[in-house]
Image 1 (tube, helix red, strand yellow):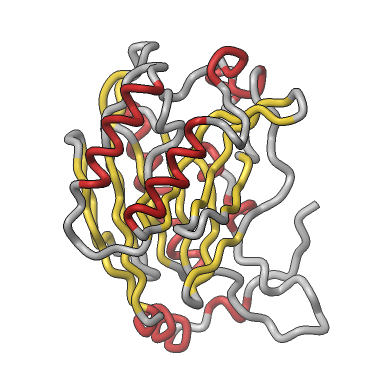
Image 2 (cartoon, rainbow, N blue to C red):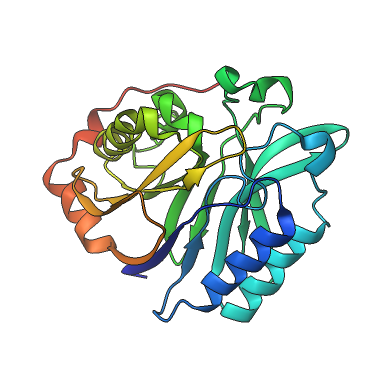
Length: 267
């Protein structure tokens, strides 16, 4: 696929109200008129950024994952976003990557937001997830992960026996990032695109959560040179953007900075 079409859903969320959120988001997704390959929802889209996983977390065969499976099949799109999941007695902030076939992958948030107490309620993930669709390789991350560039760094240089090559083409970060640090959000999204020579999609929520924290959205789509192809602040918005593989390859060929990357291993 030379082109990958992504629809971002920037929305307010009903605090810790799964039924209201799933109904609201189903209406929004069913209302998308443009052709698209992937629909991306914010972090913890079914509840908001809750610290009550003991009450609100679901298992992988629960209602929300089933909702994603049915809606993905109905609309013929990949549906992506995170929710609170319980597994073997642990709770995870889990990014689900749901295919129309019902197959899915997932990524568990590596960096739990200690300032908000997330590390007291959720277990950290221990591995990255690179999804694939139509020849595009996509790195899945969640909110606070954005502050840790090593976790996002292209790792196509770790094996000295192999020729170096970029590991992924697109980084998607889903978030509940507060407005008071929106400058950090926007700057770090652009930095990740520039240093990894990849597209970056950041999808954030808007509105106040149950703790009174205001979110200004600032969802963005950024090209491999760090230019914003899309940016929306404050208001709810559903936007579809086409990413172009030839443009990505042209940047990497004309400015092959990735070839000079340090070889390292994450442990």
